[in-house]
Image (cartoon, rainbow, N blue to C red; front, side, top):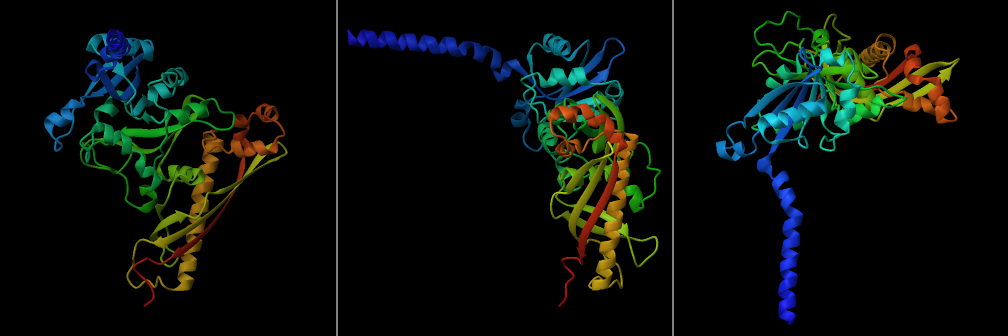
Length: 407
């Protein structure tokens, strides 16, 4: 009798397990899913939106071998909303679209200029979209940007999308801007949203700019000196006021943003040579600590002070230059201080007076001036930021190259 009861129990358990996993097997099996690695959103002439989906075939990696790139496929659909577009593309490809591995969401400059709050709310409400997904505003159409997002040194497009913003930590010329950060800033009373500025290198036209240090640091996506294979580039930032694109930052302005946000580990700059007119010295500069930011409200107007400390070393060398001379190193340090104070001050007044957007989130520090959050909300920081005044203080200590030391 015990054996019969045991067999019945085992049969019931097997049936329960089959019923529990049968649905997940039929719907979540990788063979029934189409994995989206990137999305592009453009304005459509026929409908509200044109939504582009970039797919990759995971099985193609093992089939083609590690020496070949895994191919990607892009499909676009005109729809009234993102949800409707996903539904239409599901019908077309015969598989369920899965967004859990989507690494990048790209908006065209055209649609970002009209406001993207509806799209951001829809995407952030989708449980498959990860908050760490990067958000890009493309100077070209979003589809064109995706078509030219090709991994030059990676076999997988997914790997490329994972690392393409990594240069922000050692150049400061871009930022690891995510849709989670964008959404948080969108609903924030003390900061404004920003996104990566994207574009496509045009290998069919020659660069007409000069090659001095000032021009090198004023580049941005779709306006750089890069030449070669036509690929996507991500230099600079797109600045928003609420959900509307209001302007752009070039590479040196983005570096200023990164310094204030304490998002860059070290960076290369060219400062005026104190001993030679119309000459520059390359320095590799490292922040010693996070910037000291103080915000006071004087007669209803924000007064923001910024104090930064850096160490650095001379990166370029010059014939007959005595870079071991203490007086010369002091002069170079002073030149570095003046240069950084200048570019940071210009950047801050651009964000406040021209763009009127507090993308660095100074409002979070300004809240200390109010007894309650309601008082701060009534002050309306995001509108008062345009009236701000700034004081920037830089203290840097520059030493000679690590390979050039006293014997």
